[in-house]
Length: 544
Image: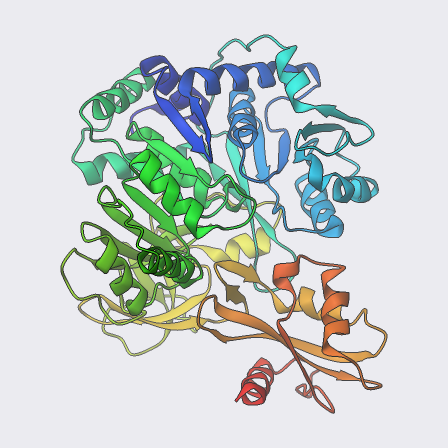
């Protein structure tokens, strides 16, 4: 792709800072940060981390809500050639400890309000030696240092030569077991997010970091740069990837400042910042966004949303009725529904142009680099085959999963000399490229874009003293796509709320079941394996 060893995001971000120092890089709620300030603060944090023994390959865990410190600490990690690691702020102490221990993180940067969980997790993450706390009104955790003091007392780090082989790690839920760390090299991210952006825009791919900065500055000066508002938080990884893509085009990234999704805040930010692109996760975001606009109209308030030219949904399907609702309010917007994954993609696209009728829900088209793979033979199926296959995408992709060779071999497959990322979604691709999604070949639950694997819900539920056995399944939900229902057997009559409370004491609240269905016995196959089809049918029939 032309940049060689300079295909490193710290080097490229430094080029953006040099080319347009006073341009706003990021807006988080009411806070705006220029490239000059972002680069300076990241450089100071890099010095402080280096003084604490952090260097090439060190993992730095990020346990934060949306805040300037999140991007600063990621940038500082890139500058040091270290590896940032996302940690879901909804996680409880055992889950935080698992991520940090599995990644062998040596640093954790966290919001003070999450300090009790960090303290509880300390004994279970022995590799963590440096705790840096972001101020949010909570007392300083014993053994931690204040982020603002660490930055203020350090001098900016000198710029160094770096490698495109440097990495970031994105932890993602799987279908069974614990979350896995997806390892992306900077050079592969450049291919997926930078190179693709240039080609799509018809721009010659720059060959040096200075040219990357110059192209970004030129696009910004010509008014061609995006103002990207990402509704999902930075800790999901999607927002960071979108930020990278927007920065390449000289753009500004806008993020919500609140700690829970607020549709009115999002629309306020659209108006205040002349947002041109929205990124969201299916109906879980679309429904409250459209409901907020309904309420505004009923109150006689007219929103100025004409600047929005693109809406992109990924991670969960965007229904046709929500697309139509957007079209009524944002008539200039192209609506793009994508099927993607932390491991790569996109695997399928659905595009609705302004003034056209959106396709039916879940009708997608496969890009040319996407195939289906026969689960029986491991070979690529021809388009038009009626045999269900696993979706696979060629192109820039991660190295694999952190220290999980078997899962890496299962997901990242080389067939006839081509490497594909195959996360496990089954589909049929017609000759014309139309994709019929059949669902994941596993039992993973997708609730509002969050992956929830049943095993951890079931283990948590069995901690309740009366629960004998349990299966967790996803059932259809209008807003979130799926919601978690627990089918369980108990030794004595038990309140559903008590079981749910037990689950919430161990794992994140969003993973807990919304409903509990009690049965005399949880059906299992003769080999002891759970029958999730039975459990799902039982859960659905109980709600009919």
